[in-house]
Image 1 (cartoon, rainbow, N blue to C red):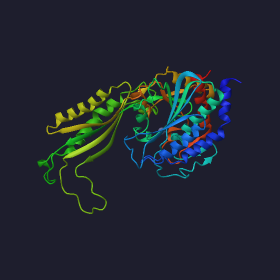
Image 2 (cartoon, helix red, strand yellow):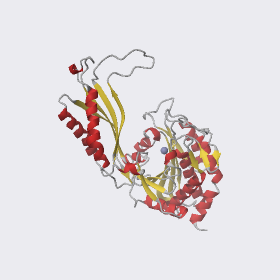
Image 3 (tube, rainbow, N blue to C red):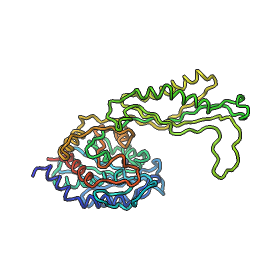
Image 4 (cartoon, rainbow, N blue to C red):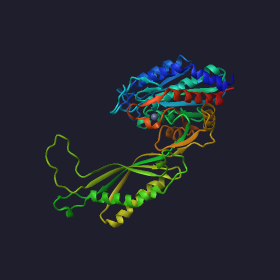
Length: 426
Ligand SMILES: [Zn+2]
């Protein structure tokens, strides 16, 4: 039997273990926010992986956003060394899951099996992917005990809330230094036949217009910040949105609509703050002296962040020409550069070959509209040889009755095992 066939049957032989591991992970409700049971899931995985020969380390992201004594940000890094020197292949999964939400017909933490599906919050995003990577590593270790290099498996906190208590923290500690780790697979649910090369960029900012308060019966004595903001929004509709739609990327972003630059006005607040539900009186008549919007601008690899910011400043300046009393402020909140791993990178080539060998079809290449932990690996870790690849359908993430397919998990575990054989094998 050739190596690929032996690896595939080693995965098939572990089907029950794959199912049981996925169920065990789903049954630890690692809800974020606030960040529950992080220690429990890290302890569980540490025990599981040390039984299989891994050296494990629990790392708390001390002082990271969200870290507290009540909700400490725990991460697990497990590593196993081969018989000979070589590269390190790292599988990174986030262990946190988002809130349950409404509309479930299954127990969100029951990990019920129905046919080929395992149901539960985090099933596809991304405990199924985490389990698949563990089984892939096990099958590879059994089949090729004299492998070269090393394998790392990490389970990290807070991806759903920006990854600062997880991958960003580990990257800052040098855990993704290219001298230490050479290949990274993030088993996010991008489907078993697709390789996700990266993501678009993000700029979040708060834009505030200023006015002057006055009595609402004599608004001409004041200066309405809401009317100024309305002029800003009108200018966006008339000039900015058409401009953004015209910017199309060469990145293979899915869904198709996200191949253009996009801007979302995340929120708008103006004038007097809203009273609580217990207030039964009327508002007082005032001209709004402040109005704020939060913008969420997603940009393309072809765009430059400085230009993206300049577009908004230019827009505000155009409004100013029309409105003599107009004053504004722009405050940066958050920014992430777009990233896209080269199709010729070793991790991409070996994953593409493995997909073809396991599924009998060519791999598709995609880019994510939103960011995920690859941003930290790229920006802080400076490691470019990173992809997202894993079982499950992205559309099911964060939905009620989230599930992951057992067949899909087994297939992507086979792909991951073949990648290990290609990069570290004989
Ligand atoms: Zn995820």
